[in-house]
Amino acid sequence: MATLDQIFRVDVIPEAPAKFRANDFIVTGGGQAANAAVTVRRLGGAAQYWGRVGDDPVGDQILRLLSDERVDIQHVHRLHGARSKTSAILVDARGERLVCSAPSQGYPPDTSWLPLDEIEVMHAVLADSRWKPGAMALFDAAAEYGLPSVFDADGGEPDELIALSRAATHPAWSEPMLKSLKLGAPEQALTQVFGGRNALCAVTLGERGVVWFDGKSVQRIPALAVKSVDTLAAGDTWHGALAYALADGHPARDAIEFASLVAGLKCAVFGGRIGIPTRTAVEAFHEQRWERPHAGTSV
Image (cartoon, rainbow, N blue to C red; front, top):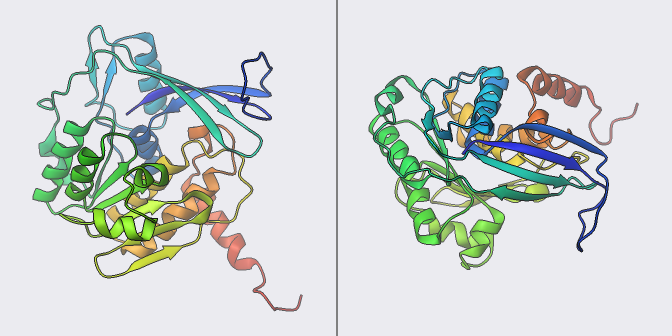
């Protein structure tokens, strides 16, 4: 999915109909897989975005914003007469968000145009849950070449999502989506959805960190402690950073820790995609972190 996001910064998200003034406003690109591709680029990797947009002005903006990030868009499928996807988003003073998305119109399920033979020269793939036939075709092709495949499991019918999750090597569910399966606590639910090609199955829990199951044991790491300004695109950033780290050959735990660090830094900046950190910013944070005195050290 790729969208055009109109983001309003407000003090509180209203619970009743009213007119009120935003503190800030920006327009930027959005969408799970599109933001993940931008994350890979900002971290220093190369990324192609395969997806569909309409041949309307919104589609033009979506692609220009991806191109500005140096994401390869040569294989984006423009759909004649289709309406591209756009969202209006409120972000409050706690960094929480309310998203209202206008649905795309005229997007067929056809996958025949996907350049799946190009996967041979890739190091990892990623898909979100918004175009399920495309995601399944991608994961099947990646399996033929033995590549890691990251699945952002957030949205859709439970049976479809479980099938897609098991078709990927590294699926990671959003907490609300995993909870909707009614399989118990995250630790219990992960052991039940794990299967197929999974090397692990994870769930992102926001400020409570990440939990995953690797077929043998359930493991957890905490989230990065930051003052949250904007959680919009944090999950997209996490998945993109995970794919980047796996493509770079890092073991699963290191890749998850890296993804959590990158997503945490994103939350410290307002503006959805705008807050995705660069490799330079990540490295600078690492240096500052190690310069801090350890607990119990006299200074």
